[in-house]
Amino acid sequence: MQTGLNQWCFPEGTPLEDVFSWTKEAGMDVVELNVGEPGSVGLTTETTAEEATAIKQLADRFDIRLRSLSTALLWKTPLSANDENIREKGKEVVRKMLTLADVMEMETILVVPGVVTKDVSYRDCYERAQTALRELAPYAERANISIGVENVWNRFLLSPMEMAAFIDGCESPFVGAYFDVGNVLQFGYPEQWIEILNERILKVHVKDFKTSTGNITGFTNLLSGDVDWEKVANALREIGYDSTIVAELSPYDTSAKALAIDTAHHMDVIFSH
Image (cartoon, rainbow, N blue to C red; front, side):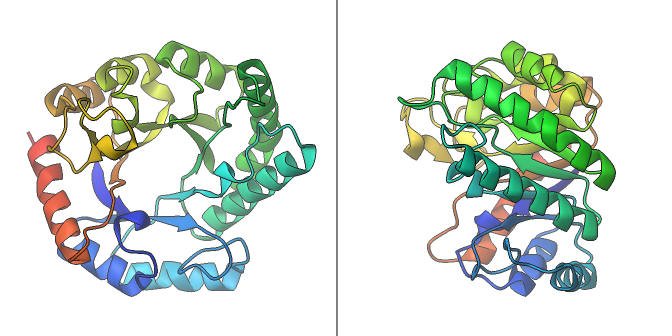
């Protein structure tokens, strides 16, 4: 298992050269980049193949592996939206991610599958998201890039058995799970999710969560919350997981580099036994 950081672990606007160098100096080998709006630092929906190649070459200079790609754009253009035009924009985002991941020789893109709201029913979210992923799967297959469906706070896929069934219903070996350990702690136990999702897990995000807080402000740094990390690490070993462990944390206010150093140490404590 290779450890690393998501680009969001650094303050918005941090140059990629700093992201790569600080991650490497901390002793980690992987950075997960994000696709943002035009004008964002790094990859955007307007990034060309040539620009993406240059970013990969920059990462190579620091001996940093780019193995997966994430985005927050699908919260704005969910694959489950009532408006078909919005759903199509969401699919465009996914196709752009697949194109960039292909150019940069990555393995997996992270996809938030949909969002249940007052106006978007659970049933509609399920059917629209699954339909969209079935449609996108051939693009993923042609690029040889997997789509990792992430469990997030979207009022959707609230149990591991349901998430497993949803992924299996996409009927493609190129659709799996991007499992986020901290995101399930409010309503479940991550080690149980890992056992059930099993070989469907393509990539793993880590952060901690304080259940006593019980809301979005409860997310915290590794070893600072209520995740049973020994059980999580053992569960990942038991299913034979051997890909990346990427931390997705809020940046420190005073030292971006310090977060990388602290997180690398926490990863060692959790996963090196």
